[in-house]
Image (cartoon, rainbow, N blue to C red; front, side):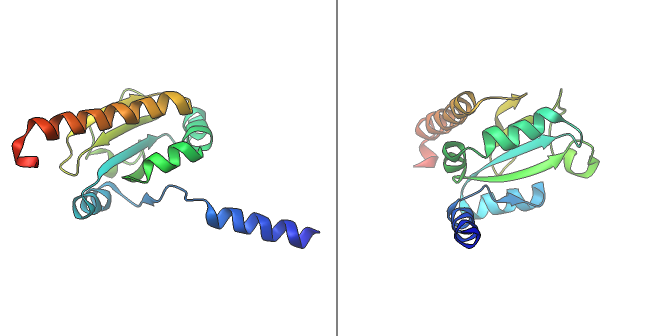
Length: 140
């Protein structure tokens, strides 16, 4: 019985398409340019309990995970000055930036959000991208 449970757990872990986190912002931006994707930067604090809740409740949700497959994702710690130099000043953690590969901020989200609220932010980002791409004839 334990063997069957172990196999089922391994299979479910393999089938889940967890967020692929890039190691740093420059790598994420470079990959975003190559793949023509947007970037989601998750800024967390080393001891931030709301950051942990955001990762384990919201970002690990299957519907959020599915939506974020269209983005290049990267996690950084606000304590890491090298990573933070590529970002605007933050007011608290968790902070999430949705940005272009050229570092243009499309949306920023500060604090903990539920799955439904976070998906509404993703929708806002995608609406902004659509409206700018249809308004700019060079994007056609």
